[in-house]
Image (cartoon, one colour):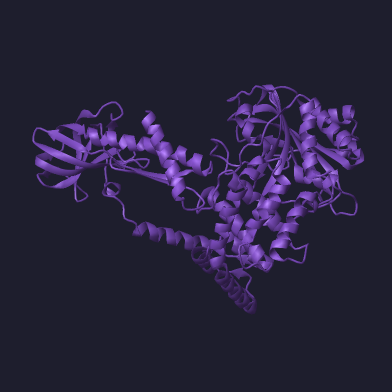
Length: 622
């Protein structure tokens, strides 16, 4: 069976068992700051399992696209060197939300593997949690798996419930035992069954994990039975495809073979067994799907992980002889393999190619000089018998030539050399400290203040009475400001909005019995302490004096209108350029608005005109 047929057979099997086929969620998790990327099938159902969300179905099945690169779950450095590590993979899963439990989950798994996929029963081994007698009895007494092939795994990770066969969402919350199904590749491959000293070998490979969420763990570690136990399962499409196609390594399955051939075509690589071709086949999947889901190469967060993967791919292409952009030319081959299952890949094909091509051209401009430095350093190390690559040199490669640390480490690994990561981190810290020292901040950021917070009334009022809590002149605390002097005023109550979220601070005036202070800007001194910046127009201001704070109504209204325009602009840009457009910043004041966003290149005159028409149409409609 081809990989696409296996995916389809899995989903249709569970559909026949009353499961709703649910589309894969985005690789960018929705409202889940704990995850860098979607890395498991259950991610999109997390709130359902926690009881915060309810779906119109109690049984679901998915083929979920996943990425494990960066963050806690990171397989990047192993890709190309092992048979089964990937940055991108598909997780087949079936889920029960308080519906069926262990008996049906185990029965479904066995039926699919042995009757639909027709795997030999004597090739399948099973593990259960040591204390889960229910699952053990179902496997041995009802399914009929011989007891010598059902292995109990206890707390093998140093703590209570810390086990390969006990799953926990976190330190507290839903958790429970799991049962894993393994495939025996045969005696000709080294390795022992799970739980044995040789379990890390490649003979016995886990293909399916069934998690039984039956407890809620409290802060004291006490397990309370859940009123509606649930099931969460996961089976890697690449692993089960390798088994069903009679090959040992995931890279030998049909899906990867097509991409490896594409990589060889674009790099003129003659050795089809080269690990670099496997890296390219893996990385084109991760990069293309991430871009399709709106991630753009950048210098932080998800964007930087994407950039690291792209540049790792380029380096492997360079190693194979590529000296110009090539990676983006593999996208049509990927679309041919996976575009039917994931329409977003086909819809975004041109944009994905454009993003990759631009990133390639940027890195190809520096990679040759960077590689020359790497080779020179490695040659000097070999002559000196040194096995640790200099961390300062690694930082220079990062800072000047765009070599991420893991890319340099990847090159060194091929020469049996490590990188001095501590020295690299120290060099990075020094640069950040120098940047901070050289930075220029607004006066408010440097003012020392110890006193009550400012109560903000500006959403309801544009005029409010307040008392002066502090005055500053030239950055120092003073008791009074005289006519013509510039300074900062802190009030206990104010209607003035302090600059935040790209919107500038309010301006206006503070009017007291002894003087008038013209407010030209409002900045936060602390999170809840507002500094009114300006000049004393007449008279003087003194600490403790009462004032009436009046916001410039016309300026506030103009700023508010321009703030609204940023939302209209964001919507219009996504309609014209695509849903990948994301806001990266803005500046809103009474006279104008500036909107920063991600896109693959400069906008054309026609695109600008379309955006303007859409925004103006919305304005006129209101």
